[in-house]
Amino acid sequence: MGKNVLLIGFYNEKALGVRYLSNALNTNGYNAHILYFKEFNSVNPSKASKKELDLLENLINEIKPSYIGLSVMSSLYLESVYLVNDRIREKFNVPIIWGGVYSTLFPEETLKYGDYVVQGEGELPLIELLNSLEEGKDPSHIENVVLHNEQKQLIKNSLRPLVQELDKLGYPKIGGDNVYFIHNDEIGYGDPQTKGFTYELTASRGCPFACSYCSSVNLKRTYAGKGKYVRFRSVDSVMHELKEAKSSIKNLKVIHFWDEIFSDEEGWIEEFKERYKNEIGIPFKIWGHPLKINERIINNLVEAGLYQIVVGIQSGSSRIRKEIFHRKESQEEIINASRILSKCKVPKVIYDFMLQHPFETLEDLKETYKLCLQLEPPFELQLHGLNFLPGTDIIDKAIEANLLSEEELNKIMYSSIQEQYDMYWGPAAVNQLNENSTWVALTYLTQFPKLRPMVEKLAADVEKGNKENVVVRLQKFMKQVTRFRNLAGKAKLVISKS
Ligand code: B12
Ligand code: SF4
Image (cartoon, rainbow, N blue to C red; front, side):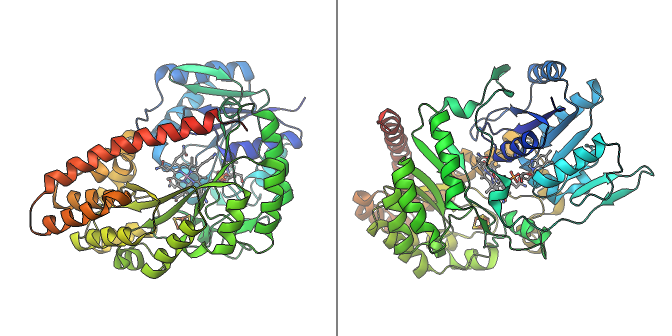
């Protein structure tokens, strides 16, 4: 039996990173254990409690891992990661390895806490690092590994080329023993994903775009010169994974593809359509981009079983999109994409916007309202705030424009998990009571085609300084209606026969 390795994923009980690494460890002679530490919760997330840390300590005593890997995908919950790291340091003498997007982008900072940091995709460097430690060799020259050598000097090795044939990395572990879930002061055993209704995966890695508020562009820069950044798995590999998911998850009703932008490769989509329809046949959801929407792709995907697409528009103001967010699509391209989605009858279309941030003026908000009026129904809107993420290009823009100081931004970016979520998703993010909130409410109301004539009349009144209260009250009411409609839609999907 190989050495035990405990991988810990945070606030995400379906985390793909640890599931891929677990597979890599098991096929290379190690015995991987996965702990999902706390559930994904965008409404009311809480930091690690003392009881949850005690449960972690008991689990480590049970498993006796030789190595512990912390998978730090997002900076939002660093406070809990530090608590976990401290508890392990305090009670055990086990090497701690940090990996994930945050560690990739801030390796030196991360190394203040872990013994080793693995930058970038971890399947190959993690195995090389562990093999080297097991064999008593010097690990200080392993590509992607950041560490202090025996002389206490910081060594940051270069990154190896990106694996181009993604199929070689296998697919993420599904179900099995050695999986634990600590949440709400309790520990559960077994893979939480196999007990639910959805399965989550990606058919690709990387994104071709470069939005200023997103870490994807920073990752792309980190990998500069290391080969193509956007890579696709073969349809065959995706089908194998999904068939295993189908046999492991009894109540599987929805497949969730989390590709940053779903493939638009000619040939890939056509093969995917045929095989998905025949071999899987379960409704699926994707993320889309206005510049990647055309009739060929969408018709094929709808035929395959596309049930929901979430398309990021982020602002209806071309100034904000172009100058602040670094998004290239024009108003016409966005409107055209909405026509295609409507024409191809995608059952559920959701447009995503980030509103009420320091860069936005009242005029920009009015532009967003006007653009939404031109989007082809049916669609739903997700309106939320802008989340400043460490190292992203938008940080420099905010400082240059004197909108926020570096200190203020650091406070925002490294505040508690609850505060960060509130800034992004919370009511305060989009429901600030000021002149702008009326235009946010009007924008929200554009998603109800029957209300549009009334909404346009109200907008004219608001321009004259009247009816603000009516608009905000109507938005509140329609939010309740939408919540109810969404719950009913979910229930229908869950009770439907596979
Ligand atoms: C899919 C995705 C999601 C999905 C995850 C679904 C799932 N089942 O896992 C959902 C929608 C749930 C999600 C949620 C969030 N996400 Co997200 N997400 C992504 C996305 C697009 C891909 C992540 C992924 O799964 N990649 C595939 C896996 C295989 O790669 P990976 O996780 O990076 O893991 C590899 C390496 O990092 C490394 N590795 C990882 N862990 C470890 C550990 C060790 C020990 C080692 C050695 C190596 C290692 O090896 C792995 C295998 O190669 C990334 C963008 C990106 N390019 O990374 C954003 C991204 C990670 N998300 C981001 C954010 C902000 C969030 C949210 C906070 C959004 C929100 N406001 O709610 C939440 C946080 C959730 C959480 N608990 O982490 C940011 C994080 C940036 C930051 N500084 O915080 C990113 C970078 C996108 C962005 N906007 O910039 N996300
Ligand atoms: S399209 Fe999405 S994933 Fe790609 S850079 Fe923009 S926000 Fe990030």
